Image (cartoon, rainbow, N blue to C red):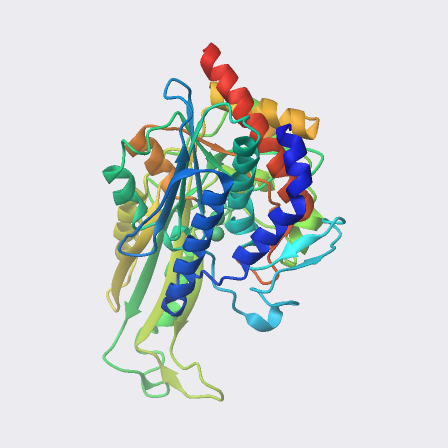
Amino acid sequence: MTTQNYIDANRERYLEELFRMLRIPSVSTDKKHDDDTHACAVLLQTYMAKAGLENVSLYPTDGHPIVYADKMIDPALPTILVYGHYDVQPAAPLNEWKSGPFEPEIRKTDRHPDGAIFARGATDDKGQMFIHVKAVEAMIQTNTLPCNVKFMIEGEEEVGSPNLDPFIRKYKDMLAADVILVSDTSLIGKKVPSITVGLRGLTYLDVKVTSARADMHSGLFGGAVANPINTLCEMIASLKDEKKHITIPGFYDDVHFPSEEERDMMRNAPFDAEEYMDSPGVFGLEGEEGFHTYERTGILPTLDCNGIWGGFMEEGSKTIIPAVANAKISMRLVSKQNYHKITDLFTAHFKSIAPDSVKVEVHPHHGGNPYVTPTDTPEYKAASAAMEEAFGKVPVPMYEGGSIPIIANFKEVLGIESILMGFGFDTDGLHSPNEHFGVWNFNKGIDTVPRFFAKYAEMKIQA
Ligand code: BES
Ligand code: MN
Ligand code: MN
């Protein structure tokens, strides 16, 4: 039996198994779901063993376990290490979901006329990660696996992978491989495929501005003291100029743009502004002057306020000057920007622009560095050829806006480059209510992955 025959004969079961995994609310950010998250890792283990993988094991961490498995057919052959995550973002707000976030259901949409699986984690990342488990199952079961394969699937990507860096340092030998293969990014569309060659990094901070010991009467003090909410807003507003360029000194020092050729490929890739705007229902697009939307999300860094609060927030009115204001600020990083360096630049600048009337605290959360995949390598060429064969068109190398912070560590610690071959769409509602993953996309992924394995093994052996 060929790999493709096996896949075609088992598509129904593949979907049923994915549904079972989607029914487990493996929300890594929520302690109440710790048992579910663990149960999801155990179910994944079961599927890996059934696929014919060996050394299937759970590696406990200080947080959620890492699922490892491999199939070594010949140490002389190249090895592909598949990375993905089985944890998901919280489902809230629940009332916005048309069907339960953990009750997967197939419905048709304009972009998915063949139907899409609606569930939290459908595309990010259970459905995408499962593509590899199922493609590898097909190759093992039909004796067509052309090289060695290892899996490392974590349960903490959505909380910044705090335990994966120590894990890869400790198990460097076990994880030895020639390339890392990841499906946790997007595809431009069905007609024009893409391979992600850039992921943004991230730094995330809490800031707190204080002006007094306690809230004050706004008649007795208003006009004569600093209002920390106003001050915080002024400080945040000053972080960008009228062209939406970030004003922190040194912020762009390590930003290098891709070649004009690569930028042209991206700018000429089909972009449907309406569709892009429609998925979250935004009223308009805006960003730094002189850049295409794909460039604004792919090759430019950002600085955004994720939340801001303070003062009186109950119903009705209360006349106060608040003593405290808070905000959560994140910066997406690109190119050679380093998140420790940017965190320091932000902190120093933010404190320097504060008036003497307030105290400023800055508390960094997690972070990660940006990553760029080199394209003049056997692995990129194999990925491009595999997609070309499966989609009938050469894929566009795309710089994407999202972050998978651990990818940069894989390069730094293990010395291995990653191929980011995603099969979802940006409009699939990742992290939003009604997240979904096209049945077409799931199947296309399963059809594409064995082609990558075959082409990569061939090119690597020739090289
Ligand atoms: N899979 C996404 C990242 C992504 C999505 C990259 C689409 C490119 C295209 C990942 O699960 C994610 O959400 N990452 C977080 C990282 C954070 C929690 C540290 C992000 O980008 O906000
Ligand atoms: Mn993801
Ligand atoms: Mn995510």
